[in-house]
Image 1 (cartoon, rainbow, N blue to C red):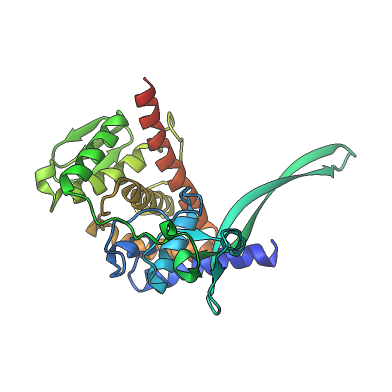
Image 2 (cartoon, rainbow, N blue to C red):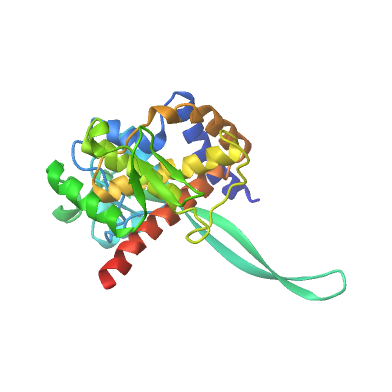
Length: 298
């Protein structure tokens, strides 16, 4: 592994470990930050396309740390092309992208085999609040939170669009893999409507792991083991990403506090774990969004 790749994995993982050791979940920070009075959303590239996966966590964390309220990021070169300039002394933020190359190797018997080598590269972006001279549209702050009824209506339509079987009973929320259904308490059992939909987002992320969908499996043997903790981390991140897309505040569930110690163990033992979890979370969110597209097309 190259030093640069190791540095990318280590830098990001160490940051998240540091947050968790203080009892703080990096992916929940934006909702608790005083600078984000507007609607929380995914970080955006200069062309308006949202970042995905691990880059969401990294740029959310940077926004909280540095007090940015505007969600748009761009490279030094992109700013220059818009006849703008990064202010002197401003430090950029790391984002990453994954790629792969195919290498032909010779086997023991002289046969040629192709091996795919995956690698990760990092590059630097700046928040538009660090840049002067951009068109005014880039500096627009996120809009004030919309009316609860509107946001809840939108969330209701989204989850209905997944066609997942949801059973309303009891006082626990969970995904039952054996029966392939989501169990939820009735909405009146939650503190508020947003908490209900945020919890449903978490369980819907678990729903995507079914073999007929994304077939996600981390080798879970029993409740609370490492495989279980990895799946919970994926669902937590997916819920945070999806809540940002739907404009609802995520729910910090009390029953997940016990996972923090296990997550710390996983992250300390595997510098790629948070990257893998964010990637799986993004696939889960993309899958749920894809069901909406198919529903509309039908």
